[in-house]
Image (cartoon, rainbow, N blue to C red; front, side, top):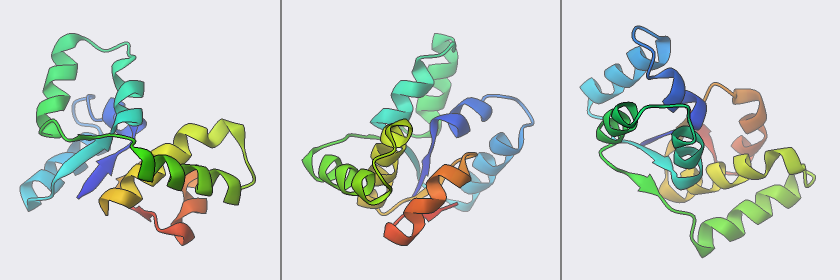
Length: 124
């Protein structure tokens, strides 16, 4: 399974973009795509049209993974381990959901997420 970060969801809506091409390749390969509820909230905050939201929901087959207690506690652990950087709170949640789901994370913000790799996150 591959979780898509908000920036990946947004850029995948651009026809011919590298993100769109990779998503097509993953789907052709049979990979399941999903996202976290945090990344989904960032994506639908827009500006995106309802048609784009519907199309992307179909791409991920409505797999939007929630933040529950387990993920919230893992995100808090990650937050503390990286030095309590307030700007990375959402990233901690997104990473925790991907780790919990056993998913790799596709993001164009690899530098922020690289610090979670040694803590269980796999980057695509």
